[in-house]
Image (cartoon, rainbow, N blue to C red; front, top):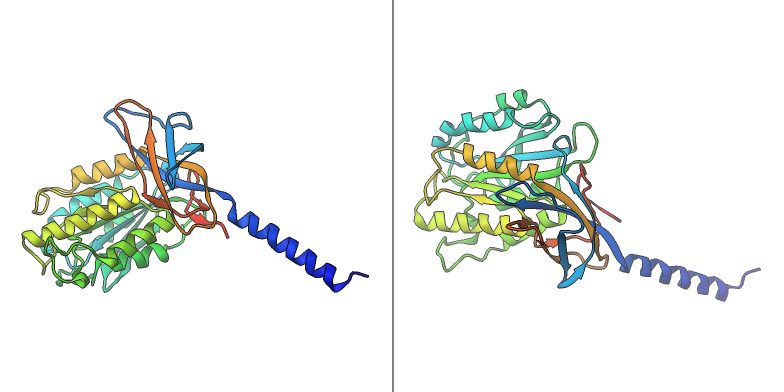
Length: 313
């Protein structure tokens, strides 16, 4: 017969062991993208990472496979109608994606994303569902509300297999809920929240600046581009824009975006399980090469060579 005191001691010991297991380092994965004029391959020998300022070993580096990728193309439904001239570029981008790559097409409306085409590998079918934005000023409410909502409710893969995820936003980037677009008012809690949500999900966010039907002018361009650049830097993506006006063509930017995905890798390293987010800084010893990665990551995030980001319990 086991006495109650013994049972309590066993329970406390089990609790202590479980707590220790949860507090220790856990394998964490992050998408890292190469920036180089020549083809470069990342490896555990040439990729370095600091977690919360401390050098940490990279245990594995695997290139992202084209048939293991999901791309969410999110278009602001409040864009100027002139974006209709760019639909051909977007269709060409979609239909030229590598076989096996899944594409989602959605429109940012009222703080959420409305699906025009769920994730599919039928690129021709997805291209047919592309339409001109409604062009109602401020229809997205805030593109950052839409971004947060989408990454938190990411749709399931069509094939059920986990995949590495990327976002491309076509938007003016202005956050109307932050008030003035003055250069002295460029701190938005909604932008910061969207960055954190994307970091937790392990999703790099790319964007192309395009003017809204309602909010115009140099200050609006500055504000929107500033926010989009901040999101890209925080998540390991990239913000594309051409001066303060709308780009003549989206093709060069979409080509660069496709190239970035092809030059992305999944890096595995350890991070403290107790933290919600940890600061991460990646670098490489490869000559004339830089890497892009999120500034923070959630410990336990699993992406895999062709994996959707998930979080260990």
